[in-house]
Length: 235
Ligand SMILES: [Zn+2]
Ligand SMILES: [Zn+2]
Image (cartoon, rainbow, N blue to C red):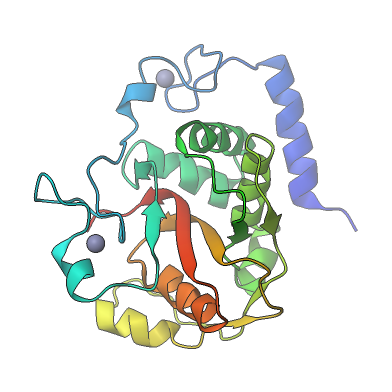
């Protein structure tokens, strides 16, 4: 069977070899995939809560009031960017329009800003709905993590977690509704051989999904669960 996403990737890869130096944001000449004018326009996260990744109001605190009052299962979220223009478009075009040049740039940017993981940790990709993967023809989060893996050294696994329940689309749901919707959404296929797991996802929206997965992983005896994401949605 022809793997259309691989063919598409090959064609775009070929085009990139012919016209390699253009900025994915503005289309002007750029050697690194993004030009020096557009790079500073990417919305970097700064001074955020270590637990939930949202902006902090108090100057010297590390954790927000909400996380102090009710600590989430996730111990730490690292996301170098806000899910805002022009970065949101790069992720959307990669996921929904298979813009492979964006994949390469996003992986390079993430690897550039991400601190190296501790050696004993293990990284897993957020599991996707099989139905969505079939519709798109590829697993967007899995491909992204593979591309980052080429640029950073870490231990990863793709076979630990399954999504067991088809959850409703969460758009428009309130926080409590999202938490309820995600309950028992995941199951572990096998035990982790580490006490420190990192979940990789492309975008953290409310945090309800990663928090439910972190809950599932911690129930299996893992002590610490961090999240790596390309971008965080600002509330
Ligand atoms: Zn540009
Ligand atoms: Zn917080």
